[in-house]
Length: 392
Image (cartoon, rainbow, N blue to C red; front, top):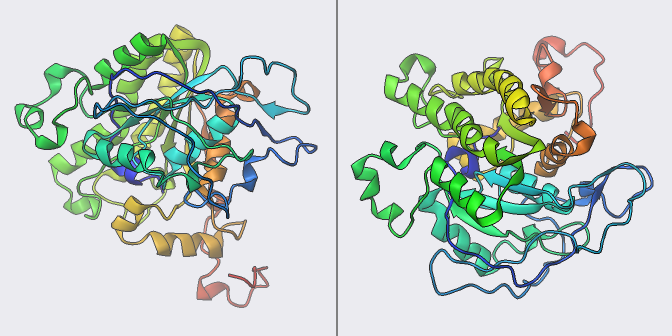
């Protein structure tokens, strides 16, 4: 389920000046049979990646609230020798990930996989969550979940405040401009963030949309108000259109854009209301149209990942995430709990040259649950000899 805190709230981006004081060599995500040590599959969970906590690197921050100095997650420039096997190699690529506000969702996992493959990471965080996110990052609260396969820590080059509900400064209502939760932030609409990224870095190669919000998600669709429905569409679907409108012009040809969707776009998921199912259906339809338009105009690929349920903070707030995970364990072809890293690794593949001919696609990363027509845990199937994992 993609409604996590990076999802349920919109990311934000900030145009403050950063400077890198240290560059660390990242590992490369290699899925070839011969590469045992570099596989991202070794990561244990999005919250606890390694059993041993790694101490924080010396990351310096300026006194300004939004001007941080953070080391880059890129390889050393001298590391240019060919890699063995068939690796996911994103060295020299720069990714902007809209929708990270903690270390507990798919956006964070995608950032880690991209960093493990050598990409430089830029992050957009929802404005009201920015201070908490940066403070937690600075104080080392995310250090354990920042551990990459080679033992180094994922580094974020720059964090921008971003609220993707607003395209331009003219779109921002007066009550939002004066809201104290936005105080101290500037240039956080989609247009301003794209301009700031262009000014700071020139271009990007990868754009990730990992954000959504449905203010009435707990209401059945039949009881959803017009406001709640349109708000869900705006925050969860149109925000992707807006991001591509403003970021595609600064993306390098051959780049890739990825969003996150959910099976509720195609199937009935009771409890996933407030227009969120409609928003995800719109997102998937838009993915196809955007793939054509952005491919012809900018030479970039546009795909979406339909991820299975994840026990993220925001998903817990919906109230039935544990039941969805249990249902998946009982009924999916693969009887195991989906890890955030598996979604992150799929995103790294889609962003890499290995997926150079894939665009306009919905990639299901859900242990195969999307393929099921019935729930085999139903009592009506009790007499069938259906193999089941005894652990579940």
